Amino acid sequence: MAAPSTHQWFKSSYSGGSGTECVECAHGEEGVLVRDSKQEHGPVVTIGIPAWRSFAESLSQAPASLRRAATAPV
Image 1 (cartoon, rainbow, N blue to C red):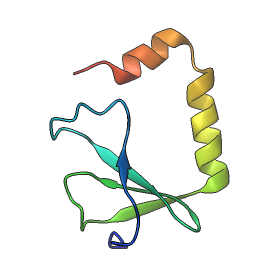
Image 2: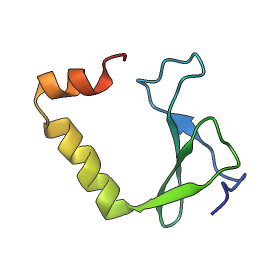
Image 3: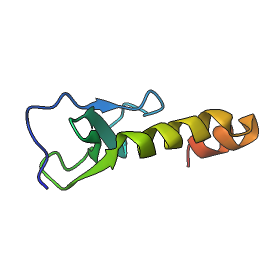
């Protein structure tokens, strides 16, 4: 599915802001839309609301050491 131009896309607060961001998200009627930030017109993945909620909750419950490792610069 091509990225709809009617959605308001946003980057993670963990993104570096230097053009190296990996993904952008937008709210859609069927769930959260995710795309490669460097390919605005590329494919979009739709993640259902229950799955996204479970994903977000699992991140908030991860030990602090894992959260730091997941967001550390490479």
